[in-house]
Image (cartoon, rainbow over all chains, first blue to last red; front, side):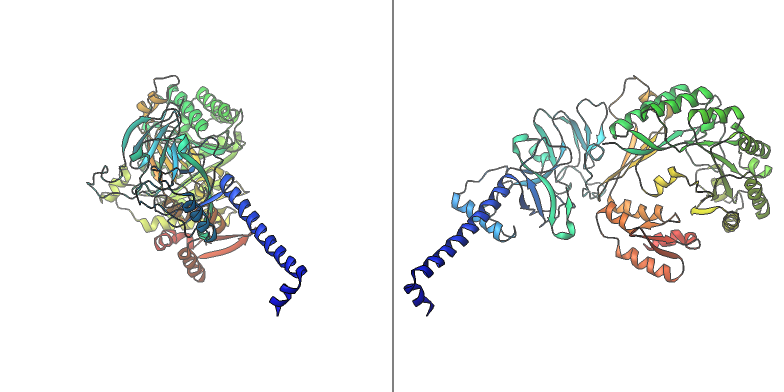
Length: 232
Length: 390
């Protein structure tokens, strides 16, 4: 009956088409606004490892902003992948859509599975001009212009927690991810980044300092799971 | 960012060492070297700068025996500390004092330097007891000092007493407390003797060479506590009593786990992480020569500060939160815990509080939308048992 009406009534048909177009345009506008916000203002990233435990546990979602400014000591940052994988525009668009409609529960991850082929979340512990060394998984910092070394926690702008497991007596702390290294000096635009899970994380201890241009975004807060809600 | 923290200054010099004392100090017949005062000020200025401190919340000079400082040193130390904090000293500036050092001139020097609170180690009024533990002050010195303080001191006066010193009887201890209160101190710290390994007295007792009854010392302390409470002194912490609201703001910094800097050889400071962050506790070297050489103004400074740093993870600080907070009559605050550690109040602690509340050893009260859990006067006697069960 309804189909018949639409065939007979040009007005009804026009109204129906108008509604469809309106809905589609609204959806497109909403999608475009969200994509603009995600690209230029805020975007979520799902943490898929324990490397930032305990402040950012596995499977939590962190809100990042590309407005980095000058990175500070203690900032949580999103680093560009160490090894960039090339994907088609369609593949990337599908990944964005999947993440969007599943609230980041599902995104297209690396196809090669190679280590470092995904963006990494890490914490900045050394700034350009610093001299740093590590003892017992803790970084000691002599900031540019300062005479003495302080622990990373005394220098950082904000408090954070790290996971330090005492290694068994007699254990060589250089096995696995080392807990000690001698003094190094950070040059211009060089940042030293570490995971908070100090015994079990790949970071600047392996890669060396990262360049400022490798920092893609700055972490603002953890918003999922809600029990871990916190500013970073 | 403006920051206001407490400062502890350690003067690790004594003219003689009491046999029960395990605080770090060295005998120094010649008093305190001027170079040590300059090193202290240099360290305080550095720590204030790197911690972003622009004013002191409280200052506490302990020891050792800070009262052996001479007048120019007193003036230099406190004017230097004042300069670091924008030309002012906080309302509470405490100096520990040995009764033998109390003179009208010294008290005047303290007052004009900005000291507002005098903490005097009386310990006992019995001549034999004081002599037995090799206190520098005789019973006569103690009485002269108290009379001098009553005549000349205008700030807050706090007196320390120790129950259970060898040779002290219940009668002599209570008589001593009664005599002390006749001088109307605003604040009394009442300790039960702690037998510390490594002290001459502790070694004698622990080796069995000196007979000692710990229960008797505790009974004496309980009688002392009741005596103070019945004379208008409120117990606001396990060992501390005051009247007219003269609580020690500096010690509350420790009990409330607020940041404090420690300067001087052997001093400890702690900077607490917020929202569940890591805290750092730093203890300076006990090598006075190395300390003074490192911090001497304009000296060849090594990049490594001579100190030990301890990284305190939230689980440790959380335990200390209960250990320190439950010492006070105010107790611990649930909301403060949640804010400090960024996690819910431990359900295990909640259950334990409920159990102790049924036994009359704990109170739960609400104030300004905050929930406080505190041990009762009797509950405080079992603080260690509570912490063990936590």
